[in-house]
Image 1 (cartoon, helix red, strand yellow):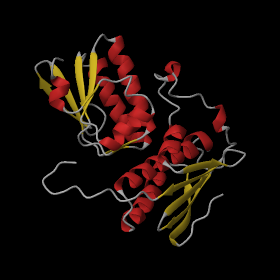
Image 2 (cartoon, one colour):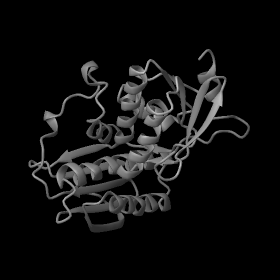
Image 3 (cartoon, one colour):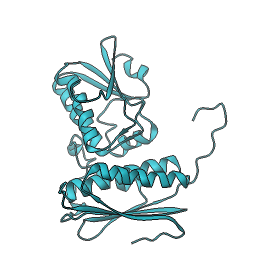
Length: 152
Length: 118
């Protein structure tokens, strides 16, 4: 599993199987990213990936079971973010998921979360059981300043 | 609207219903459920035939929200109605591209373009 150098923010938190609790962890991490002046598009991608991973853990992993919890470990360095999310479910095999972009699956309402996590994060790794995901995101280069008077 | 606060601002423009999301974040299960029900009601209860979904206010949406949009699209097609999407910011447009849902939906840059010839 990847590690982070120069960690400036770090925490571990256990939450109940409740999406509102998941939202508050997201807000905590987003606030840290904003304090460290991560680019907006990085913050967007990390929030989206966290939302998908937390919903997977709470709904699919723990099946909303109030006796089960989700562990979130977050490390933020100057150049990289690492977020680990572990549920108490029986896990799954991400390679078994159907391709949501295949023509025959395009109109299925579910099954896009993992794909979006992969697209917006630098790396996504599941443990062999499939109940723990580690996501990392490398900081993007700053967008060039748009000269005054020009629209983006 | 029956379910709690109204999450869509509705406007009629020459026979077209423009529904603008009021939320910045279309995240969280219960939130998405309410927004989904209000969307479906436009077709199921109000029988609106031409609907433009305006994303001007939306900064975030998750795959669960995409699921509701897909269900909305199916309802619209089943009712012989039409649906257009507009004013989607670039980060979210990227989400539609990655998932290839930009092929499923008719997406326009802004409200005026969505209304043109609808």
